[in-house]
Length: 93
Image (cartoon, rainbow, N blue to C red):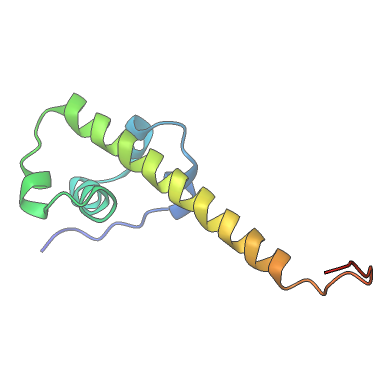
């Protein structure tokens, strides 16, 4: 079985580059990110040996995560705007 490792989620989510993230994530965690975010099958992710390729893909995974977070925030804002009570101004139909 693999060794137990605690990862600070805020550190990995807010780090400046994927190289920083790659340095903080062990190989298993990197594979998990590649699999869940980029939809790369585990057995393919596990075969990526070239450090520059792995860093590139982890950078892309981080970009996708940022885009997804931005989309989620926009959806939340839109839902909040839709829940606001209607204005008291009467407009003609």
